[in-house]
Image 1 (cartoon, rainbow, N blue to C red):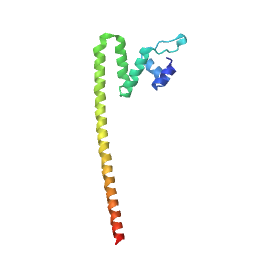
Image 2: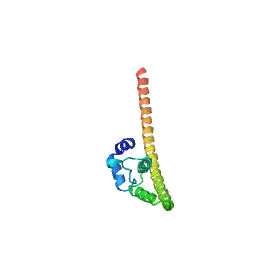
Image 3: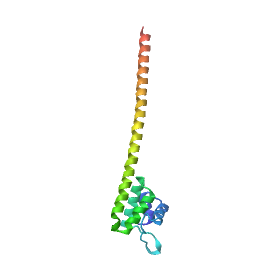
Length: 136
C-alpha cells in the first residue's frame, strides 16, 4: 500500500505517517523502486496499533519505547508487558476520572429536568386556576 492509501484508510495525514516512521514509532517501512513506501502487513499492524493507542491517550514517548523494545527482540518481552500494563493502569485512571465527570453532568442535567418539570406543573396549575376563575 502506498502512503496515500494508508493515509486515507486510517485517517492519518501522510506527514503524520512519515513523522511516526522518522521518530521510530513505526519500524522502517519497506520501499519500492524509487524509494516509494510500500506498507506491508507488518507496517499496517504498527499503524493500527499506534492509532489505537494514541486514541486511548498513550503518549508518543511510551509508544516509541514500546517500538524500540519490540525491535530488540524477545528478551524485552517482560519490559514490553510492563509498559503496556502501566499504560492500561493510566487509561483506567483516566476512564474513572471521565466517569466521575459524566456522573456529575448527569446530576446537573437531572437538576435542570426536575426544575423544568416543576415549572411546567406550576404553569399548568396557574392555567387551571385561570380557567376555573373564568367559569365563575
